[in-house]
Length: 222
Image 1 (cartoon, rainbow, N blue to C red):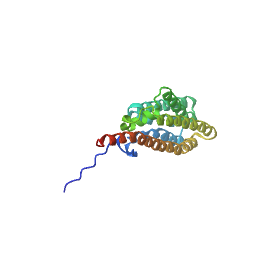
Image 2 (image 1 turned 120 degrees about the vertical axis):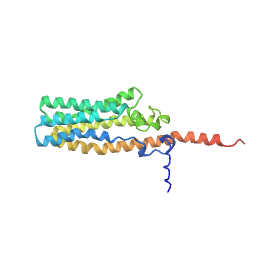
Image 3 (image 1 turned 135 degrees about the vertical axis):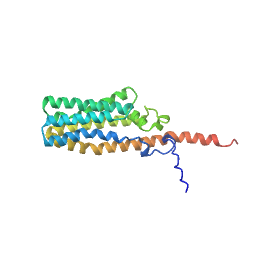
């Protein structure tokens, strides 16, 4: 029996955008391991031991990360924040100082977003074009959709930071770790969905004039 050849998929820029076009690396999900280790260890023993274990896991995750480009750069920023939070937690013997790392990340990413807008290279455009290389031929990094999404990303991070500051003030570190992430999860899922929908719509808008021009060129002369 002959085996059927798999259909060749056209580049994302030449067809309808699909979720499988995103180059998701499950290694990114490993970034949640350090705080998980900290939460478990902090429930079972001294805070200092929990922080040391979490930092050790963070180093392993960072070394194993194979991302490149701007995603790698954001990973470096995240690792630096975890490391700084670990040092603060050890010096102050405070589990809240270590747990506050996602608040620092929120403010840091908001600042990165604002800086990217000032440089006319909105971070969402850079990330999206890195995840879907086919978009580079169709949408410029400073496309209005990427600008709008980056502004939304900045606002999202600032809102998360403010709410998390309140939560950390009224909760224990262990409770905060769970509640702050449960609170942020649907917001981030909604934002990712918005990126997919709005970028897909923008791709269709940009591709339509090209397809119309191609059909006009194929028409026989009268």
